[in-house]
Image 1: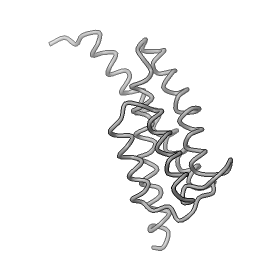
Image 2 (image 1 turned 180 degrees about the vertical axis):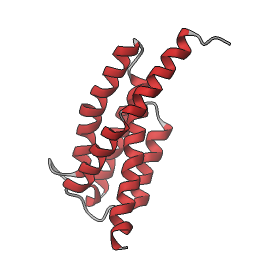
Image 3 (image 1 turned 60 degrees about the vertical axis):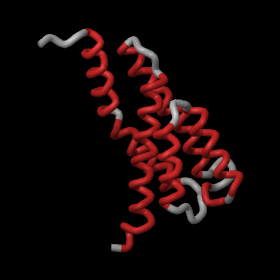
Image 4 (image 1 turned 90 degrees about the vertical axis):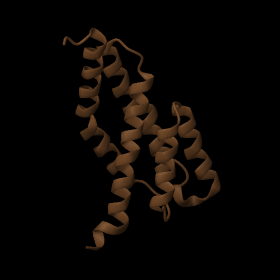
Length: 137
């Protein structure tokens, strides 16, 4: 059975996404370790992950983050906040990585961008769990 050009491209894209995982983990851990936010609960962060998993819109994800900031101070406020950093990473590092992968594969970057955002936030949920419970071992 031979694999089609489309399948080859998809395999290349998935490989490139996997190869960018170290960067995603580093970016989200840095955001959680070095920004200001309140007593953010894991369930609140998981709600953000759930929104990312159920939409095909990066703008909807950023809109949800801003909505959460408006509701309470747990996400932080202002330039040094976790919320601001998440949006900066989505629009900066993550988008740039998606554009590079898409350019090399000659396909639309948006689905790649969303996959990278979802992974980034998923790793964030894990790191927040560690920050909240794992350091007290």
